[in-house]
Picture: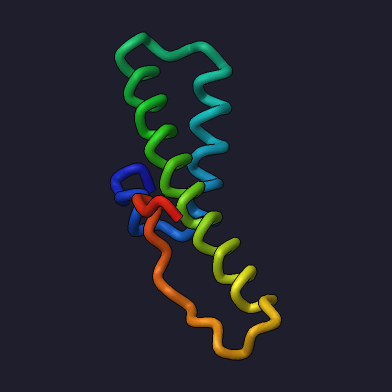
Length: 81
């Protein structure tokens, strides 16, 4: 799973790997270089997961909107909306 790009992983896969990385880092048995690599991977997974959560939140908000003509637009985490 570690070879898969976070962008290509499902939210659930990302969360499971992130949980595993946190456990490994909390255990404290890693050398500094390995710990830094795992931390970097974890940050990447967390960012992608947050983006997926934000997109899902936007979609739910649109679906719950009273307006029948609301348009579902692709989520852009870089936009200033």
